[in-house]
Length: 207
Image 1: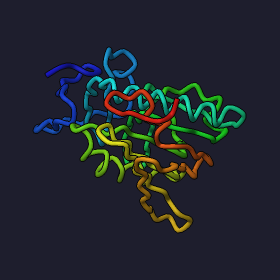
Image 2: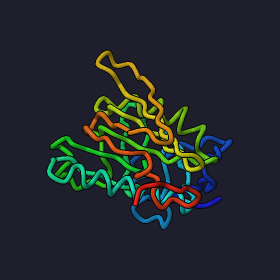
Image 3: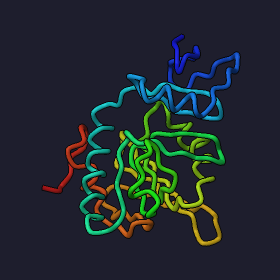
Image 4: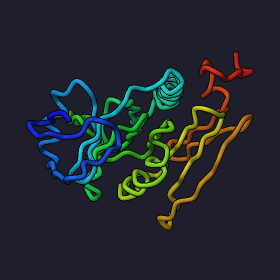
């Protein structure tokens, strides 16, 4: 057990406290500002995040670089895993691996969280994959500005893209190997191999 914002909480990722102890969003935010490690918040409970492996880090870095270049002359911002997304309706705060915001309300906002992402990306790991596909995706669907939710595999060259259509329904598109990947929310297209360049365990033909 550890302390968080003056309240005892479990510190291992995704392990629920059997004696439910509600932590308010305000207490969570106060604790997060001074905590040496990051935590995610879901419906009154706080979960510590574990460190990422090299493959995870390289994939996140590659995508951040590619999207920053693509959006250089646009009003959009590409944000890495140090920023939280606030999901007010779901009562959650999550740290996505990558988030893109294009709303003018975000551009000059100095809060330590964002509210209006159009694109969210998560690099999958064995410990979090089920949660990323299930409860977390359900929570993200409550965000009215979110257009795409993207899951990126570490152990194979594969990206799953979930898109919200005009009717509000989500549709899946999977990209593999030599495919050209598209993120419609920001009008991006590029090779899957470029995204996986220099990721340990993958050989790509890109220079």
